[in-house]
Length: 146
Image (cartoon, rainbow, N blue to C red; front, side):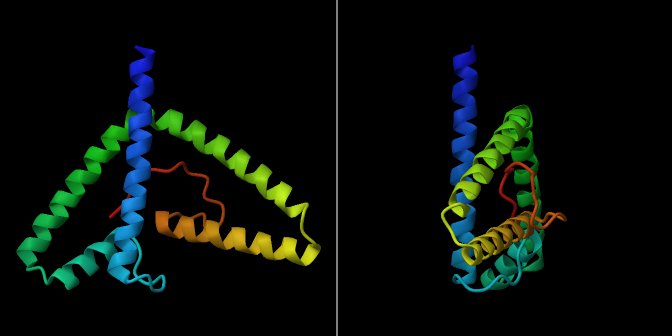
């Protein structure tokens, strides 16, 4: 039984990673790899509506399907959320430790720049997730949002 749960967790984590990569790739493809304008689920739907020239009826139907998909994905994650939360905490510890080790190899100016780069990356991630805590988003990864 534990082996089955382990396989299920591995499958869900794999699906999450694949979904994240696919979402990132789709976002880059729609935006052509340009700037940060128009992020988030609403912006994605708006871009889809504009680029596909959807009728209002098509747009309502697609919005409904995306909302349904989102509810189904949330339900899939619900049983493994505690494990994902634990993994996120451990991943943060590993990340912080590696960051500290790298900083020890750098001079003070390089250390400052590295900290700025990391802060910018965290703000960007928080923005993509729609977090209010830009720069210090400690939420575990969740289902991709579009």
